[in-house]
Figure (spheres, rainbow, N blue to C red):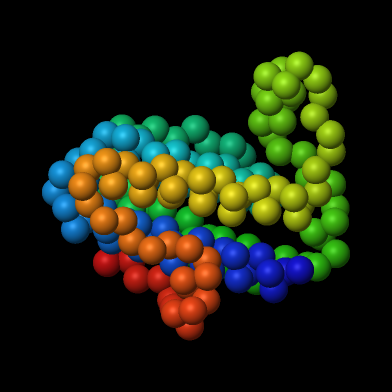
Length: 168
């Protein structure tokens, strides 16, 4: 199953790099508040999950600390480097272990009941799904702005020979 997550996260990095490259192809897109807020949130959550898996303290990030979109992109790229390091040391047996996310109690209040226990594998699945959801929102905004979004589907990545990400 670790192989599956490495595959999913390789696609996630490729898709993140492609969407950032597309952002920089248009000055209008590069300055769009919705797009930048969505990409900030996507990377903020990526870091939150990684920090929870590695036992690092939760950090509250602020979009205001980035002087421009390129700095935010570089921060997103650095997440993927940290994720690669984490994945190298991950053991297959760990995937079935209980992993309670630090923000579970917040969502339990929203749900009106206690959340059921989650495994590490379930939280790892959630990260890929969450990132995909927000990339989809960004792609919709591209279309609203009259800009063709890149093809980010997993199957496109597979058909393309699983290319490496390009963070330019």
